[in-house]
Length: 248
Image (cartoon, rainbow, N blue to C red; front, side):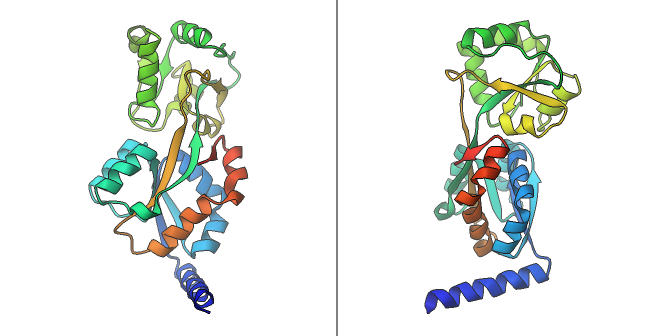
């Protein structure tokens, strides 16, 4: 009887929220916005709130949270989420890994795809490229810097590398501003003018895990928990895979 009563109350709260046009504010990167846009009706049904995604590179979103900006749910890189939990900004008990994505290489759509099938081929392709773009503060930036140092090509790449502060890597490749782009695969798939060459060679690959956590200051914590529950549910897995990701 208690469970039935709680479920009924949650349904009433959800209905009232939807009727009042209430919003659930989600902090995340482009991959979060891609998924939320695809399942918005399910989110509204589960929470009673309209999801509103505020996007930027994960490092910037982390700084905005540290500065005290209001939100309900954050979907960040796992280690960034851990830092914010320790700082008391996020509720540890709600921490859930919801999706992960590998790093890929992009070229302008229609351009010849270079060989990146092996470590040596990838290294040759980077050295031969006229220009390269990857994020200055992206989820994959630290890993890429370590890879380039490991391959002994960091100094050779530096003069021809562009590092934007915003999630514009795939757009820059699509517009011809850079020959090669390296970023998480879903970001590449989201830009019509960019084309995925393929993932990094297995020996160099790193999977970025995106973790969802409820804000400690959110007034909508029950709805936020329902959102995370939905993002982690098996029903969302096909959506993630269609976007170039895997369940967390």
